[in-house]
Each structure stands twice: as structure tokens, then as C-alpha cells.
Image 1: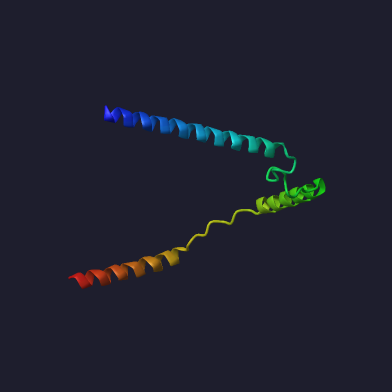
Image 2: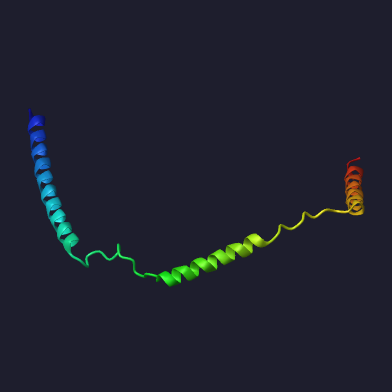
Length: 105
């Protein structure tokens, strides 16, 4: 029975702690509600800087002009290599492979 009496004491301590926590939560809730009713209590929801309609219009027109300039450029043609250049590269590569093959034998 000694275990049960210790358990009962532990349960009563937990209940009293719960009561204390509930009281503290009520105080916090009350403080939050009072702060919420204040007009200047929360400045993070108000925009710090507003822009006039004319300024927004200027920015919009400038951005549209930038996009128009970007889209007006024709794509660059794909570069190709001449047949002579291709032959030079192939000959150089064959020479490299021949050098490597000669070293193995």
C-alpha cells in the first residue's frame, strides 16, 4: 500500500500544478486581450511604406519596357564548324590516340 499512497501524493501534486498553470494561462490570455484592444499595440500588420499610384504606374511601365526589350532580340544563330576545322580536330585526336597506343605497346 506504500506505493499507492506515494502515487496519490504524486497525483495531487500534478493536479495542483495543473491549477497553477491554468491560472497563469488565464493571466496571459487577459494580458493578450488587453494588448489586442490597444490601437498602437501591433505595428507589424501595418505597412511601413506605402507607394503612390503614380509611382506604381511608373514602375509598371518601366518593367514592361524592360520585358519588351528582352523579348525583341532575335536568338543568336547556332555556330557551326567548317569541314576543314573538323578535319584538323579529327587528325589531332587521331595523333593523340596513336601516341597513347604507342606508349602501351
